[in-house]
Amino acid sequence: MNAYPDSGNEMLLFTGNSHPELARLVASRMCAKIGTCSVFQKPNKETQVEIGESVRGKDVFILQTGSRDVNDAVMEMLIMAYACKTSSAKRIIGVIPYLPYSKQCKMRKRGSVVSKLVASMLCKAGFDHIISMDLHQKEIQGFFEVPIDNLRASPFLLQYIQDQIPDYRNAVIVAKTPASAKKAQSYAERLRLGIAVIHGEPQDFDSDLEDGRHSPPPPAISPSGDGIARNAADNLKSTEPVSLSQEAARERRLLQNRTISTGHFEALEIPLLTAKEKPPINVVGDVGGKIAIIVDDIIDDVDPFVAAADILKERGAYKVYVMATHGLLSLDAPRILEHSMIDEVVVTNSVPHELQKLQCHKIKTVDISFILSEAIRRIHHGESMSYLFRDISIDD
Image 1 (cartoon, rainbow, N blue to C red):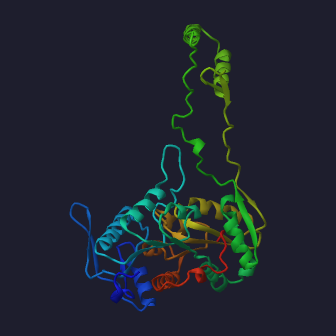
Image 2 (image 1 turned 60 degrees about the horizontal axis):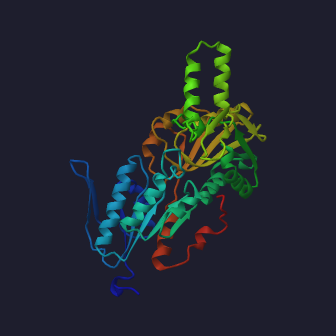
């Protein structure tokens, strides 16, 4: 039941400092104005928010994305939502095209699943609904305790390929890694094109990082104390001179097996896994004489894309395009792209990259403000969101 019947049809759109240009595009498509809201940092770097108009009983949409100053963007978003919540807003909907920390959605040894923490903070701050786009992993939706709509940018990127790439029928969709093969397959099937997969690209494996877990466990100690005596004897033996071959054999045995104590059960020998070896980079599929289009969801560290472009050109591709939803392009990425074998980088305006485009003329932008404005309109009026997901598969 609507507690504020007189203002139930009203809505407001607020934005922080992360992407005001996208907010203006969304507002213009909706024929609406951006609400009055002042978001700034105090001299001590604390974020302060001042809502300039009444939000009581209204649907409030807060547009904020993960920009270069990601931590400031997160705090602005949280404080804006909490300010609206304490001012009796009817609903608070977050429009977050690029969800900050979405790449940290898996446990990394002694790390943490940071995207789960961000989701919990957003819910706690007062958000009732989240609109995002092309989450790094679809499972992130399960981190939220409120409804979340994960929009797709693939229709806009596919339209760009058909309209802006001459002779795209002679193209092949390329997966930068085997992990992104499903996404590349989805694009290839919609465009009726072939697919190629790059295998052997250098990656950071968890097992390559030494964190202390490879140290042998403490020796087993029997109730009779035999284990202690045995260890003492081993220590005495270790002080005796040994040949290099004996020492090498001992180290090899320690690496092959580790003994752990299992209480009154007999000890277990745990074999170590063989260390991963990165194979030479290779292309599975024919790219000779074709346009290679690499597809991914995020392009930030561009070195893997540059390496992929080099091997594609070596295999005969005469043009290389990179298509991604979120163009973070941090640090020296624009300069590296400018001097690379990549012919064009196509990203959406889910995050601002005007400065990057000044440094690299190869970066092109696809506008996704239409789907964001339509999602806002449908949620505000209580309409179905299924229209925005028609013909969308889980691999898009």
